[in-house]
Length: 166
Image (cartoon, rainbow, N blue to C red):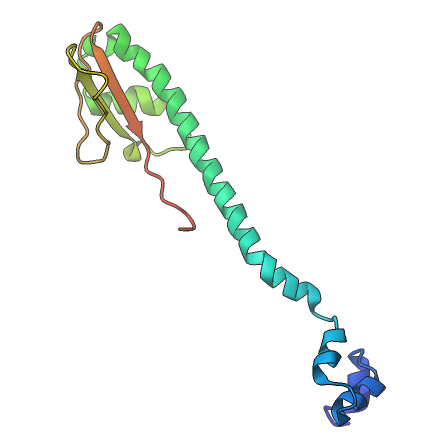
C-alpha cells in the first residue's frame, strides 16, 4: 500500500471528496485548511502557554522574596531587642558573633554566610529631614552597636538571585 493512499487520508479524518476537490482545485486550499480544526488546541496552547508559564514563575519568585523579607523582619525585630537592652554591648560581641549567635539562630532555611549586617550609631545632631541610610553590600558592613541610650540603625539584607531572569 503506498504511503499517500486515499485510505490513509481517510483514516486522518479527511473525506475523500474534500481531498479530491482540494487536489483538483474545486475547493481552495485556504478554505480546506480553514475548515480543518485538528491541532487547534495545540496552537492555542502555544500562543497562551509561554506567557502563562512566565507569570507562574514570576508569582513564585515574588512569593519567595516576600517569605525571605518576612523572615528577616521577624528575626531583626527580635535581635534588635538585645542591642537596645545593652546585652550585646555588655558581652562585647563582634558583628560575626551577633550574626551567628543571635540573628542567624532566628532564621530558618537561609544560609548565615549570605546575610549582610550593618549596625551604625546615629549622631544626636542628625538632620532627619535630609538623612538617608547607606545601601548595604558585602564590602561596606559596619559594626557600632553604641550604648543602650544611643540611636542605632540596624540593616539586614539577604541577596537573592532571580531564578528566571524575567
